Image 1 (cartoon, rainbow, N blue to C red):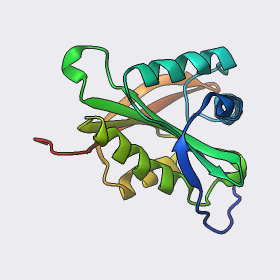
Image 2 (image 1 turned 90 degrees about the vertical axis):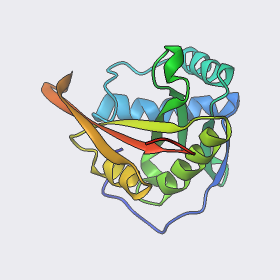
Image 3 (image 1 turned 45 degrees about the vertical axis):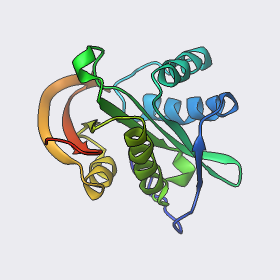
Image 4 (image 1 turned 30 degrees about the horizontal axis):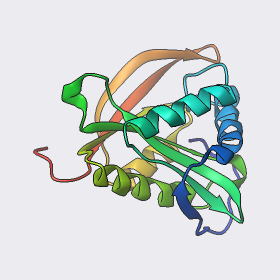
Length: 180
């Protein structure tokens, strides 16, 4: 996530499962980050059809896809996907959290992340991984650290966007009973 310089009072959004009617708002939020930040390494915003397929894939494996709403506006969203496709990784997920620019620094991520972890644990996930671009993402690093994620690795110059090379930090947290 990036900071917009705007902040206001912390909000208490409603957290609920994402439904197809939410996808245009999800698409708009993500497009903002694709086109204007390094929070994602995508360079072309996914279409609504791409988001419909992603939601179906997440649903097919039983993982959560949540939205945070404020007065019926989608203020942010979060989902978990499988960390890797091989069967031995089936208890490890990767989180994705994005907040609408108008709702940045208002506590939306701090409500979405614990709800996402709780729902992921309820369906059997035991480890959650976050892959975070280092540049312009201090809020995302801080958010994950506040909720018990720890840095477990760094990949140097693995992304190239906006005419610069970017590193990613890998953070990890146990969700439920875990040997780690």
